[in-house]
Length: 108
Image (tube, rainbow, N blue to C red; front, side, top):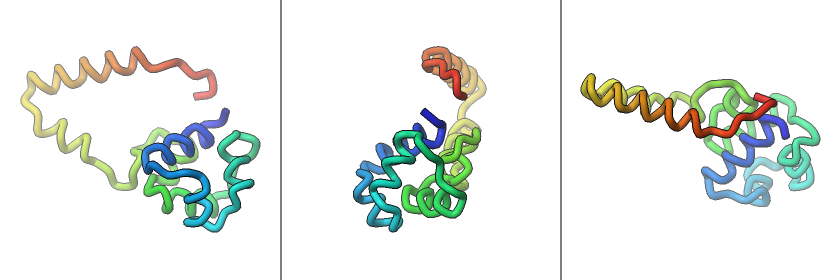
């Protein structure tokens, strides 16, 4: 499955939205969304932009780049910066632990 397909599924889940709702919001047919979700084809950039706007996610994240999910989202950085030095170390250790538990994916 392509990164776009995986991230489209994730964005739908994050928005508690079904493909039929996304179709209504974007004007993209359910059949075409099904093709994208299955990884059978990838949308052109104009459609990526439409989908990203409807799902309130960053277009670059949606297509697979290592960028924040939401455009301009720096909340994590703000929270991290507000931590004490000791808690920053704890937070980094915990993030490393979580990363070690992530399933490895050959396509990424």
